[in-house]
Image 1 (spheres, rainbow, N blue to C red):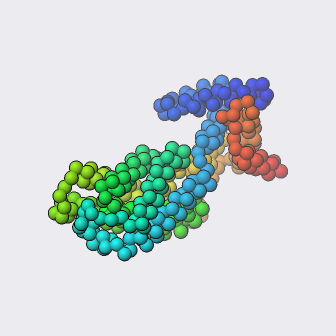
Image 2: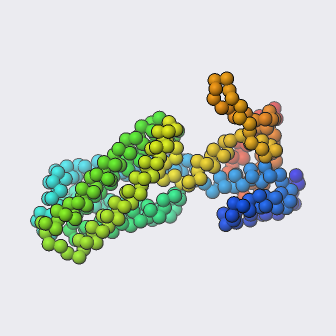
Image 3: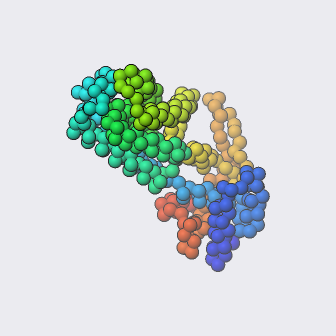
Length: 359
């Protein structure tokens, strides 16, 4: 392996350029790409794969970042649902949905409904703007569509004085999100049993509110409303947006049921409905899987209790891997190439582990 002096910058540059173009290549080119890099940078296949894993990990958001984002959403949904429940408790249309249509359009807006609407509108506008800067999730465009439809619904219902049915839609939506964000918080905090319990509650609440109560609102606006008041063009746009929102609910319900089935089979919830990437779990399991220094896979031998235990064929694998990681540290800490620097905490942790192994 070359010394990390004058030849260090070209090595880092070659690895970085190949990493940036790796997503545009077919999987069949992986072997040829690795072989070519082995010749260019004079590194082994294991070292190149290690460099790629570390480089990919630098672009992923930390658990702390995801925890903070989830926390403020959880706090808002909790506050919004409590505030909305207090505001709506004495409103007649909460208990009889037909009251949304009686007396329309001469329906006054009380101060508490005004504040409920304005706060909710501001929140969804902030979500729409911050979505481009927050952790990118696999349902980015679905959530963007959801926020835009919600904002259009609120604006249209406010302009057309349909605030009664609009307030019902807001109240129904805030309830399930509390448990979703709480389940994600407990998972980030590694309280798996608490996470499983909250996720089970969330699944029930989601199905009741989004697939039972919300369709009841659509039924009232589609069937009962035409029997009570004359129709107008904005009414059809309003109903179309309500149905589009229901379609998104059905798509998310499919994802939720998938996770629930996996949780029942495995005994714990793996991932979340809006994980930052579909590769997140596979990457973490790949990094935690033992790999032999020669590039092979560990052998599986039956243990005494009948279960399958994974053991490395070489007892010095861990020590050699840590030594190799220490040798590759300069490639991540190169001051001449900022895109290849590794986080300080990772570097210190690897150095500490290497010193421990050497002792």
